[in-house]
Structures are given as structure tokens and as C-alpha cells.
Image 1 (tube, rainbow over the protein chains, first blue to last red):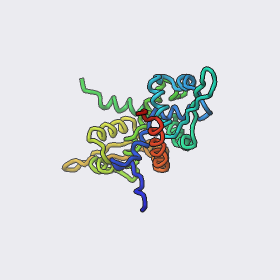
Image 2: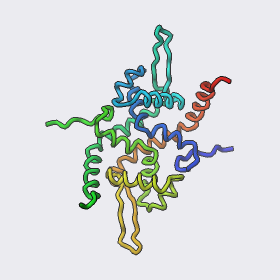
Image 3: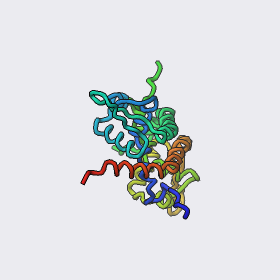
Image 4: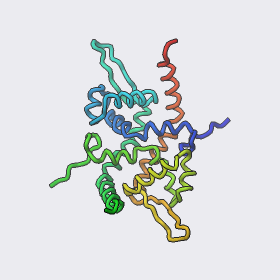
Length: 125
Length: 125
């Protein structure tokens, strides 16, 4: 039996929840921050400016659950916890970095487009 | 004066709102659906399964405001409205498609990882 192929354009395809994991601002930034190697929670929280403790915890747990991030507890006193990309997480780096790159390359144009749009759609006084 | 470079890792950098536009499930699907050429609202709503009218309207308006999508009203009776990618939108296709491709390639593994994780983290009875 051939498995039904995944198709995120279909409402009930489970791949859509996988797309949600990567098509996410915090995933882009957290996975990007882990590109250089294992990091502790506090270092990540500093690198990803403005992320709340709760949001970072939630993002890391989601990435761990989905197999993109590995959480390692080092047997020390006190125990040291580190987060690292798995192979699947490393595979995701390329498209996520491409998205980051597009963002850097187009931010000025997008912000200008917004101003133009807002001026054209401002309510008449 | 050199402009300050964009950096989405900084809390207050405006590029973060640009990242939000592309790191979004509906952007991936709507921009992907527009890859083959101009489309009407109803065709898009059919292609992107399960998207609500409200969410599609909101996504298209956001993409138009950010200069990724062009909305054209053809002077016919009744007027025909079409949505199309701009050059910036077409530039975004590549990273967005790469994200879609990653999703397809890794969905099975991610879903399996979720099962393993949930089994290991199930509350003891």
C-alpha cells in the first residue's frame, strides 16, 4: 500500500502542524541562535531579544517534541541543561536562514510599502 | 551616515515585523498558491484548504500592504479582482517553497518524534 503523500494545502493533512512548527517567528530565531552549537536557556534568552521566558520554554519544548532540538542534562552539581540542534533541526537551518536572509534583504522595501499602503488607505478626514 | 543594519534578533528592530509576515503558515500557503499566476479570491480559498474567508482576506491584505501581493481590479461588469505576486513576493517564493519542501520531507519523522515524546512524557497512572 502506498502511503498517502503529505500535502499542507489539504485542511486535514497532519503536515500542516509540521509547517506550523517551522513557519514561526520564534522557530526561525531560536533555531538560528542554535546554529553555532549547544546553548543554555539563559544564553538563548539573551540572544533572542524580547522573547519571554514562557515563550522560549514553549518554543524549545515544541522543537524538542518535534525532534528538531535535543535537550541534554549534564550530570553536574547543579545540573547543566543545554539545547542543541538534531540532524532534522540542522536540515531546517537552511530554509529558515533563507527566510531570515529574505527578511534582511527586503525589510527596507516592505517597510516603505507599508507606509505607501497606509497613506493610500488612510481614512479621509 | 551608514544606516543601522536590520537585525531580527533585536527586540525593537522593525525587521521583526517583516519576519512575522513570511514566517507564517498562511503566507507559505497563499504565496505558494500564487506561484502559478494570478488568482481570484474564490480559487485561492479552494486551493488553501480550510482557510476561513476572514483569514484569507487578512492574509491577502497583509501581503498587499507589505508589497508581496498585487491586487488588481479589472474594469468589467461585475469587476473581476485578481491577486498576483509582485517581484518581492516572487523573491519570497524560494525560501517559502524551501520551507514547504522541508515540511514534506520531514513530516513523517516529526510526527513519529511527537509520538515518542508524548509517550515518554505521559503522566504516570
